[in-house]
Image 1 (tube, rainbow, N blue to C red):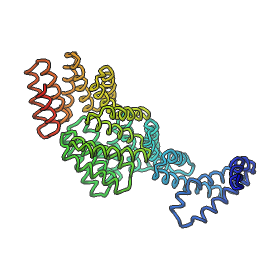
Image 2 (cartoon, rainbow, N blue to C red):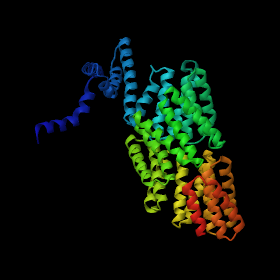
Image 3 (tube, one colour):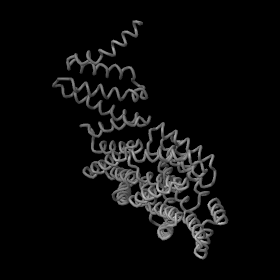
Image 4 (cartoon, rainbow, N blue to C red):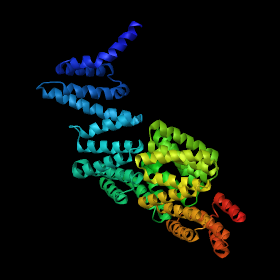
Length: 491
């Protein structure tokens, strides 16, 4: 064996033992020396100091732990250095999507004796966001709620702006995971805080979030106008990330209204903004919305390419939530191309990720899509189970549009097997909900499906009424209209 290798092997075995044999005071001196050496070597090189921050924070902590001295000024100096390096380490790890390390450093910041209430609050907010995207939804909600509680308890010191950030963050995290609590109420409080602080950009962002939340149950056209107003304000204030999020909400709402051709431009601009600011996690997330519009427009090759890119970026950045969505989206593209054998594993992967971290909304969406695939591949009992699971989730999270779609899909399944009374009831409730939320294209598609089913049952007058409604609703949606007309002719 070469001498160098032998030394390294023996060194690896005895290093920890040799370290623990050092008297505590000498260990503290060695850690202090390490700090001085590293800082001197990297003086003026901020990028290298950022990279060394995790190691420097550890040396600072151990220099305090092992030092037995009455020199309080020296201990305070190392405590201050430790806190500074913890902040740098958290930022450095977060920027490189080293999520577990980032959360660990943010937890230390939040508990550090030198941290102010504002710094603790910000650390909890940042940690909640990292946890959300790395697949720990329940923990993310806990951190976000702790940030709100701390901001409320120290409202005067924290100030209205940061309190608003904590409230908004908590609302967003809950909306994207558990779907519980007064989400809209917290967002309204956040808006009031931003207005009190005079932060017009964040107030515009909160108005955008409120419009998005209200679009689920309110007048979609009124919500669209509110989103467009918020986007104008965010653009004027140069708030790039907020503008990207708002453009995404505009695009998704336009899709809901059956205006996918209009939706594509704002969705693509949102992706371009994410690329411009160099946020790969955000880019991966927003690509899922763009591919939805591409899919609506029948541009399936582009949609699949966007799905592949979304999966790649979500995996690279450790964004488990976006990874679940990306797999679900790719499954849907394959599903619509009748590639069921390829689509099903993607749906099941998405479902497992969503279950792992409590992402209830996307669990429901994935179950809804999986149920339709199971129905089309003649697995009726499994399909019915998945529809009822999806229905329960959509009711829990309060998504009336998705609940309406599930009810209509369930009605179709029940009708196929001669359970006509149950089918009629499910369709009636589903169509009523889609009418209520103004989901024009989805409403047209479901009227068309019901028309074909009624015609096959020999209920011609009722079938014709639903057929005419479908034609009227889908007149500006070329793809769904053509598909319905073909189904109607075949029926």
